[in-house]
Length: 232
Length: 216
Image (tube, rainbow over all chains, first blue to last red; front, side, top):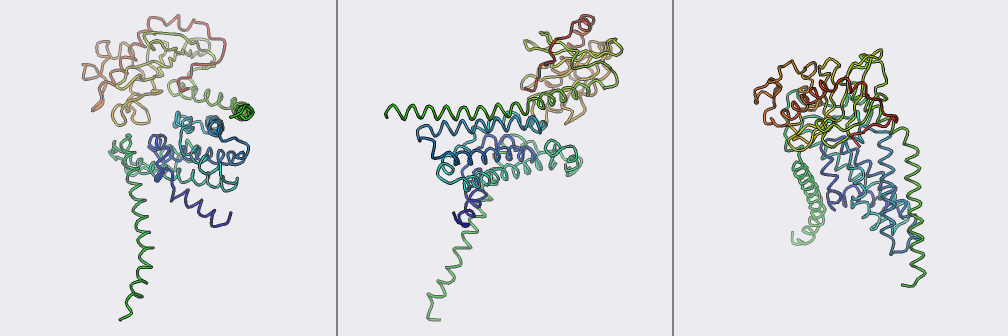
């Protein structure tokens, strides 16, 4: 694998093939836990840990697993990792665990994880697979975090509420209140707010991609027009 | 497919099942003590929110029993904690008392002093509408703190209702059902306590230290 390939894996995971914005996978946890930035970050990081572990393991065992039992083996491994992550969260981040609650076990059903195991890790060496898992996870986390940030800001006028659940009591000061009497916009906190917010993020990504494509396309076009006018 | 690959596949699958299970078992062993401690601390913290630490001197978590009280919790098991000072009853805490909410049951922790006054109540879990009914939660408003010190005589029994029903307790704009359910649950708890006070404090404590953990 060359450096260019690694760069491609990173760019795909974070942007080009962002699982939440392009593949639209893992929407159940994405939409349900993105009501605050900290919740989004928490679930995103938990998913990233599972992705990293599952991609690495699946890649390491890819020559040992007969194709017909491939999927059951992957699911088994993913479920084991998720359970381990769940127990660890309960032990060391108890407050966050209580907020994220039932969505932690649901990481098992996040199609992104089995999807990356099947589409990437089962066909590539360990190092690129681990990298793919890490950056697909970080791409997913960034969407969760951004969506959480937006919904929290619009919905209840705060930023990083409950930061102490994740970073300990010292982080209580991280919480920002915009104004003292922000009325709150209920829509942003409720499930429809998650759909609208995600829609806006997807639109924004498409807009940026389109602008970028137009800029790339514009360059050779400028040369062409100059070359094509020898008369001047 | 021949016999051999099938058998081999089964063995490999079994092998991975073993590896996965081992991972889970090891993690469980490593975290069990800490998780147990977290749950106890969390429980104790919520109990002391209702009943301040300096008002009792017994081991609150140990002095409890699990029972069923249909008036308070329907068919759900309910834990009664007894707070004592120098052996004398101070208060009883009930967890969870079930109130009827707008969109499902509301689980409450309710503390009652030995003289029949409410030590306080806290919402443990609810499914009320964000922005409307969720003001019963202390993270959203102090509404529920207003019950501290109330008893069956203050206000008089007929006024143990929300204002809309002719009582003294505030309801929320846009949400009457939620506060109504809680007021009713608190009144029922006080009545139960009045009728069973001595039996509650005399009941032997459960042997094991496990409690009904409502958050699991």
